[in-house]
Length: 420
Image 1 (cartoon, rainbow, N blue to C red):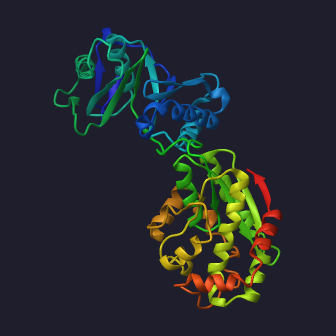
Image 2: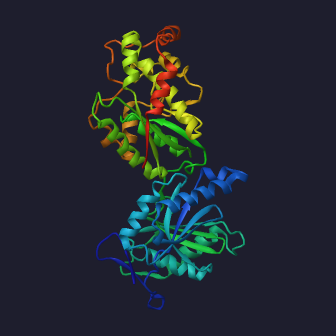
Image 3: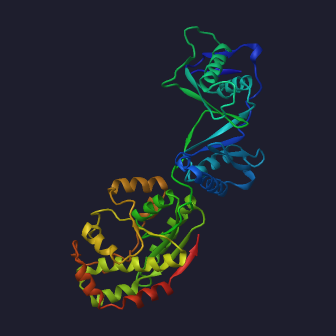
């Protein structure tokens, strides 16, 4: 067995007396969280939700159990159900979408004895190319007879001692600041885990720990990103899409459903309400000043959203608004629009510019769907010069010409809901 270095044809060889068997397969996934660790007496609730969400994204045959241990969640892998590299790759991609995980690692478990830890640390390093390395130990089990630093020293010393080099000028060295490779060791409860790679997770809070909200989903770039940030804070998103079909095509409805399918990967089974909006738009078009149309559209959307929220026991409304991005999103107009609502309105993108939002949309996978062409119900009958600083008294005066309660009730009654 040998550890190959970065330079070709130069390698470190183990003493004959220390030749080891083939490296043990990785048999656990260790999932670490960050924010959940600050929840005090409520931490168990958050951990149990995280366990549920991890199980949701994994194939049942790929694991034996998922459970909480001290400060982390562990997944015992099933040798029969993992399906080689493809199984590991698929599991990795799915776990990257679980909110609440700060990072995770595919790890090998070994007995809690320094000799076993030393030998298996050497095993996991055997096929890595490196000149410098370090050992980094987390010892959550304080009863273990060596401190974290002592484990680092013992394992590092063992790796250096059991290695020989043909060219004495080329030696592997310990580098604590910027090593080519780090061997991570975790000693916790009855386990000792070893791994080389920390895989970054989404962070945030597990889905469903923060209640439900409704999310206004237009089919554009912004609102799916707002929904993503809502889900990241542990809420379950109920999606609302307003359409003007049959006066326009079904393209926006189809786009919205595709976007929900993408976001479903982050929160699990999702619900989208498809709400007809054309009749409301016709009333506004015929009876109110053109420059106020967009403001009135948005106020009706919030009223309808609140009715859906009542049905779903949702506690707030999320939108994709960003200050100054369009005419309806000036501070003055946001204030006037929000007056129509009683539930809290959350705007996670409020201070982000378009490039920041686009970057996030690309990361989460919604961007390519969002830019597909469609006729948006909000831009239908959009005036040439919409009001940018609407006054509430003007809006109230215009709304007196509309049967607001009837229009809202009809839109809710004629809406349809789809489980994705």
